[in-house]
Image (cartoon, rainbow, N blue to C red; front, side, top):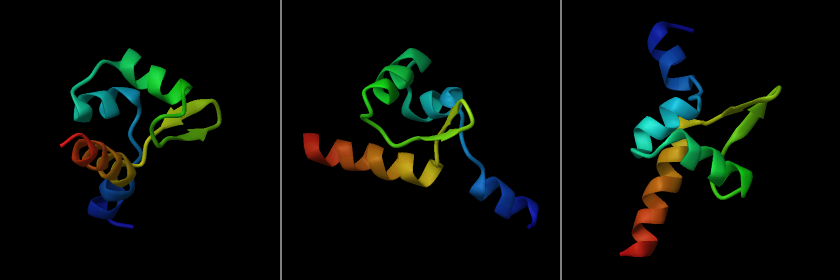
Length: 65
């Protein structure tokens, strides 16, 4: 796997997800706790698949409009 593929397949942590969504980490953790956003657990860690998070964010935006 080359570097571009590794970056494309890389999981985000809560800090990166919060940065992408322009919210706080506590907002992220609250949504995860209520199972309101897509995430996966890797051991005891919460991680996010970037493409799933983007799809979720843009779908939420369309439902408001």
